[in-house]
Amino acid sequence: MRAKRLTTEKSTKPSASSQLDGLFERIEALVLCHSPSGAEAEINEYLQECFAALNLNCWVDDADNVIVKIPGKDNTRAIAITAHKDEIGGIVKSIEPDGCVQVRKLGGAFPWVYGEGVMDLLGDRTTISGILSFGSRHVSHESPQKVQQENVAVRWEDAWIETKLTDRELDEAGIRPGTRVVIGKHRKRPFRMGDYIASYTLDNKASVAILLELAAGLTQPAVDTYLVASAKEEVGAIGALFFTARTKLAALIALEICPLSLEYPIHDGDAPVLLAQDAYGLYDEGLNQTLRDAAAAIPVPLQLATISGFGSDASIAMKMGHVGRAACLSFPTQNTHGYEIAHLGAIAHCATILKAYCRGSD
Picture 1: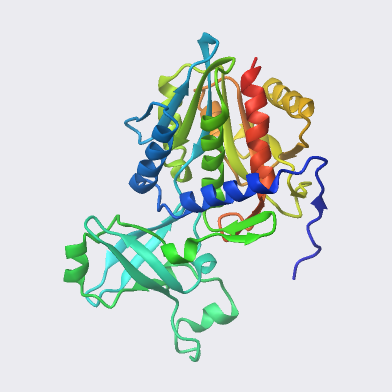
Picture 2 (picture 1 turned 180 degrees about the horizontal axis):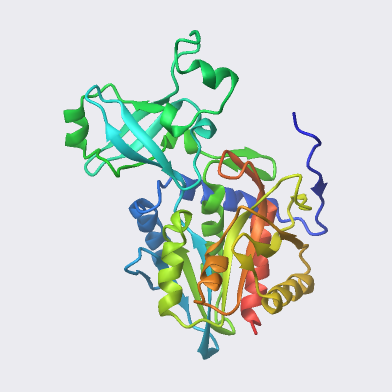
């Protein structure tokens, strides 16, 4: 039972309904692009089409990052804004002769979050849909499923995907150890709740939608600005580390979700959250102050937090010594790494703050 209801902080400047409608539609399109870590071709194609429609030159680097560079007034300095495009899911460990597939986690995924239902196995030649299964309920202590009903949460080791295909048929589809597994596409479609969006994979498809908003509305920023849809963040910020190791940056800002929990003084609603610290270390106080000033000048409400059990492209790159100054701008989100719920206004406000920052970035 939840101890108390998370409070809602009202904004003094609500976003226009039409803007939120467009943002919802953009996030929906991104969510429906499967992109488990390391198998991100579907969303890459979508992003390239979006950037091409904006007449922006983009490229995909050797780490599978999708990158756009917007020239600044000062081309001797550069900053980067990242939003990771990969999502959590599963990875095939083994295939049994009767077509049952054993799966293990990819990123911070838990089987009980998805529940029994359709999962898509992204084969080399064909996508196969199967049913994530936990076993029957009408059992006694003689069945291993009984303990899951009374004592412990379901683990990946206790679950399987039932395909009703033979191991040979799965092999023909290109299903093998290493195949990525994600929740079935028809189960991913977002749900609108007034000014809120509810969906799997808002982490971090909603942040990629902010990147697209910046791409459409950011012209001639103060310095060269890279917009990076980063790859394989959920398994170690691999794409961001590759990019930052090869690109000299004055600052790096990651776009992220921010977990709503009773342990953090964060209010649900349309006010974004600027992180001071996460599990990987401190963010840069000077850069954070500049972002706070940009938000105050608009004005847009901004919350501050330190959180645990969390890392971003920015904090990981800063910890590794790839960048000297990093920040993480986020939006409050319920049920993180599950069926997430976030205020569309908070997502929109992240874009507004970053546009103001980029036009006068220090």
